[in-house]
Length: 394
Ligand code: FEO
Image 1 (cartoon, rainbow, N blue to C red):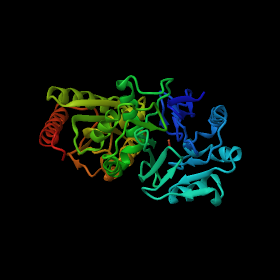
Image 2 (cartoon, rainbow, N blue to C red):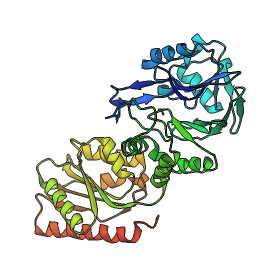
Image 3 (cartoon, rainbow, N blue to C red):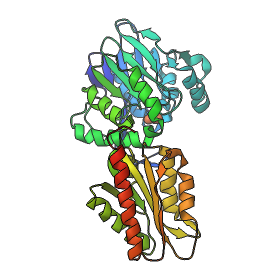
Image 4 (cartoon, rainbow, N blue to C red):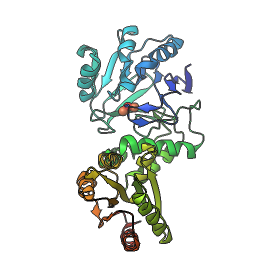
């Protein structure tokens, strides 16, 4: 079903209510949508992004409702959830040109085998006139691939942002109504997809700051009629400010590490430090990623298995390292039976974080009184470092 956003501007994408995993990796508890937009000028018509290949039939049906030829397919991003239906669109509309950055063109040629003569490359700041409507292209690399761009529809003051500022959220609402719900979905999206590119995102936020924007239309999730809501959320997430919180990612085999974790949780709470524990055997990695967006400290807790860390702790360390949150401090706690280098292994895996490592607490067997004292000391140290850092953007 095609839905009107403003006169001559329609949402023609698809809602994927059932999708629960992206990239065979990222949990999507709330499904997602692949938004595509049809803009009909009085001379030309443009389609902004397409949909995931498994929803091509829905896009085509929606386009057929308009009975308009398509002159331009704007490809903001080469990833297949937005580009995958372009070949089918080109079959239906053989005169259409694919408008993209030069980098996106090379990627679409490689990924979808679209012939080179189908493309129109655009540079940063270029425009295309649809008659009474003007599309202005804004190169915005690394949100989250290198080829990405945005489109600003000048007359209607709509910014089309593809993945940027979007949310994995399947909803029948075309526009954001419940900002609290969308905030959570957008934060999860940022954490899982955008966080490693925090510096690039800052630059891109700067690039759009002087645009007069009435609406932000991403290619996932509902449209923002209050653009400041999502722009301010992003500003906060990409800033250097951290919260007085510890993300405690743990796994325990026989209860020794779990006893340390329980003790540390209480010690931190007593000192007024927020703590978010994640039992890695049952946790949603998306929630772990969200917690990492603004926590000051990460503590990884693991038993020792075959002289190293438990594979679940390795996975958490790998994930945190890859997502590059703005976390400032880290520590490692855990227990061993007869030896091993679990803490060195984990510390070696989180180099990307650039954190200050607080002295790990590694003990033999089940924790004794002296071991709990070491955990008190760790909680003290975390509190002290937070007091010097939280709210200071350092
Ligand atoms: Fe929604 Fe990067 O694709």
